[in-house]
Length: 289
Ligand SMILES: C[S@@+](CC[C@H](N)C(=O)[O-])C[C@H]1O[C@@H](n2cnc3c(N)ncnc32)[C@H](O)[C@@H]1O
Image (tube, rainbow, N blue to C red; front, side, top):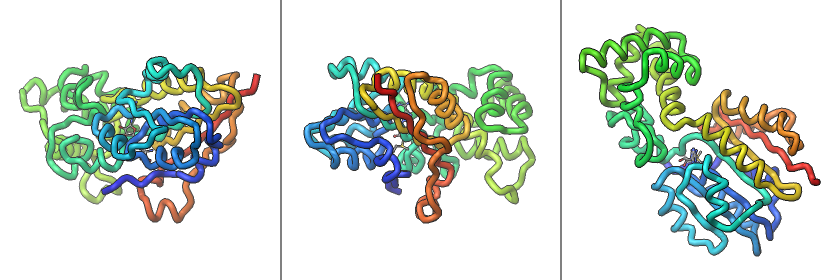
């Protein structure tokens, strides 16, 4: 499935693009938001990042003179801008989480609909895979991951069962095996509203990619690089992410919050794009000094 950009007109409205401005798309993905930003630039520039090396070719295909793509984690945004010789920018967009391409690519291990190695890394060349995390984290760490990132009530039981399987040398290696294993441990049947392993998969993905740590670092770097009345716009898909965005915006004295309540997609958008259902967008503006 191709990736449909979420809250596109709203994100553009809040970025308030100046044709001669310098913008950052911290999460290029399929380039949907990036293309729309580029259309609004004249002499301006867009620097786009993505941790996923597969985004490189998609950025090349756009072949727009105002676009510079850098394969990098947005937690290194400051270094990326330094390397580009760009001290300050007029706006930064974050559209968090995984893209439809990543989710649908069986080999990436994000989904348990088809059997694949338990990977889940946005950048498959860096860090530990989901299997490595399951194989090396302590029972306590695993329980915390499932509870904190997935609000999984059976977190301790699942963590304990994983450590037992590890000792027996029979830890599930594939997405489907692991999903069935979680369903077995929790005794939740297929009558459940969501698959019994959904929360555990989401929690593992957040841990594997240190998504919350990256968000904190990325927001900090972005806010520190805004100039004038520069804007920061964040679309999140998880309540923990939204809380970090909300609190960071509220507590940073350099910012005026533009969205008292998060902007959410309308019913037409959620009907056409189920991925949009959990989306929340917040925006802030640098206080002019
Ligand atoms: C929801 S998609 C973005 C879609 C994009 N806005 C579009 O319209 O096509 C999220 C993208 O962010 C990337 N990503 C997630 N966390 C990242 C991070 N910490 N640093 C850089 N890229 C990240 C993922 O690899 C994925 O491609």
